[in-house]
Length: 165
Ligand code: PNS
Image (cartoon, rainbow, N blue to C red; front, side, top):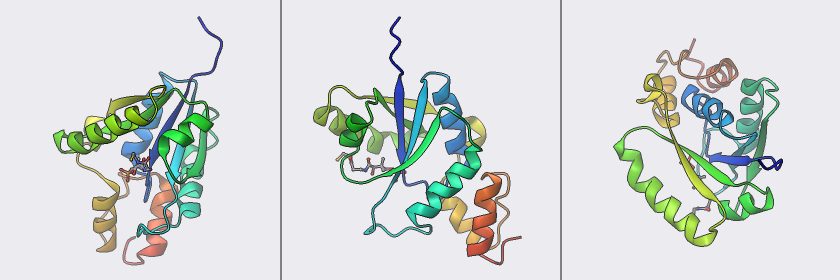
C-alpha cells in the first residue's frame, strides 16, 4: 500500500452549495484521503453569489472538517487537478439527464489529462430532484428550502431574498 495521500477534486459552480453536494463530499471522503472542493471562478458566467461568497458558505458548512479544502479555480480543470496532485475528479450524478453532459466532460478531461480519473458518485435518493438552480428559484419566491441546504447557505439565501423566512 502506498503512503501517498489520495487527493480528489470536487469541482463545480456551487451557486450555492446544497445538501446534495454535501452528501457527495461525505461519500468522496470514504474513498479519498483529501477532497478539494473547487469553486469555478468565471466572472463572465452570471451567478447569484460571488466566488468568495460561495467559498465562504462552503467553509462554514463544512465546519472545519479536516480532510476538506475549499478553493477557487479558473481555466482548465485538469490543469488545476495536476497542480494539486489530484488523482481524481469527483462529480455527483442524479438522474439520466446528467449523464450526457458528464460523459462528454469526462471524455474531454481524459483526453486532456490521462492521469486524472473521473469518479461519479450517485447522489443520495433524498437529493435526487434538487439542484442549485431549482433551489434558487424556489427561494426567490419565498419557498421553504430549509431542508435542502446547509444552515449557512440558508442564511445567505435569506439575505438575498428577504421574502424567504
Ligand atoms: O457545477 P457545474 O456548473 O456543473 O460545474 C461545471 C464545471 C465547473 C465542473 C466545468 O464547467 C469545468 O470543469 N469548467 C472548467 C473548464 C474545463 O476544464 N472544462 C472541461 C473540459 S473542456
